[in-house]
Length: 146
Image 1 (cartoon, rainbow, N blue to C red):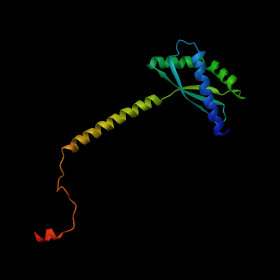
Image 2: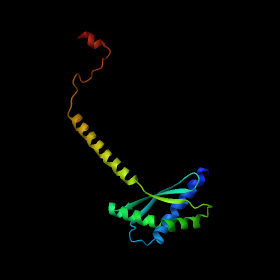
Image 3: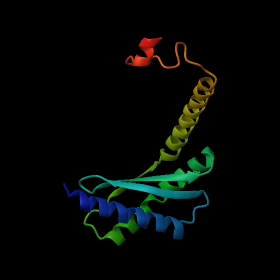
Image 4: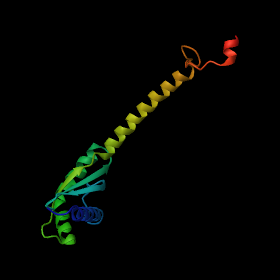
């Protein structure tokens, strides 16, 4: 096992290398607007999971996934050449679910805001069922005179 700092530095370096190589060297027409969002390296530095997002619909995501799988060897050899580690990690590409999760959270927040607005609208015209001030107050001299 390697310390977490070294694994974190290696994952940052792999992220930078993969993003640069995709931008400059990979000329596959199937590759769309790909953004490398994160890289996670295992504790033994033998496997790296590369998370990416693709701008577009499901067909463009599938085409970009196929293009990344076909370019995996080029990307791995470039990572090995530029990092200089003894064992070049194997690269696994995974579509990042973060944008979908964020969109889902935004939808849930919109539903909650709409429910809050309904409660606020119902509260605005409501009056208390009992007295305006239902709490007991200590008696004063003026109250006893009445």
